[in-house]
Amino acid sequence: MRKAFFFDQSRCIGCNSCTVACKDYYNTNPGPVRWRRHQTHEFLDTEGVFYSLVMACNHCEEPACMSACGAGAITKRPDGIVVVDRDKCQNLQSCIVACPFAEPGIADDRQENGGESTWLVEHPMQKCNMCVELQDKGEKPVCERSCPVRAIEVGEFDDLLRRHPGAEQLNKASFAYAYVNNTNETGPSLIIKPRKALKIRGAV
Image (cartoon, rainbow, N blue to C red):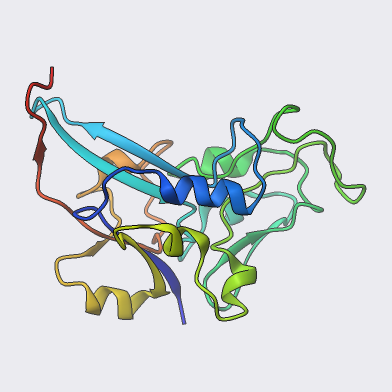
């Protein structure tokens, strides 16, 4: 089984309910780390056309972060969820450079004031864990259950792809704007149903 996110770009209204719910559930203070983030993209060749994109760690089939981590702090569970052991992290930041989506994050002193005695570094890497503790109890992740328009769903990769006609796996050909650091194809476990171009009246 391979767990995956489904994001319906045609439904998303950019309300940030998912990003706020994630921060609230995990007690994340304001700062540089965001486990889930919303972006709005405008395309230069089609002025005034905007696309929403909501992403977190994509729990890739071949995680570049895991391969790059020299401390062995990142592992992949049998269900495909990629988790980080913050006790092992040495703040090498090679995972951040390797991730095509720049999803791993390092907090600052304001966001993470004080740490655990088991940590090797002051601010070990952190990222979305797909609410693994909730899923292990058979519950939905907080992003999915907080979305008022049902634009986010978590399930089995092949099942999500089958149940949502017109959706496709995140890839650099269709969703180049999602790639930040590089264009490595890591097999992201994110399926997107793209929306038609949204023309904003009066946009400049």
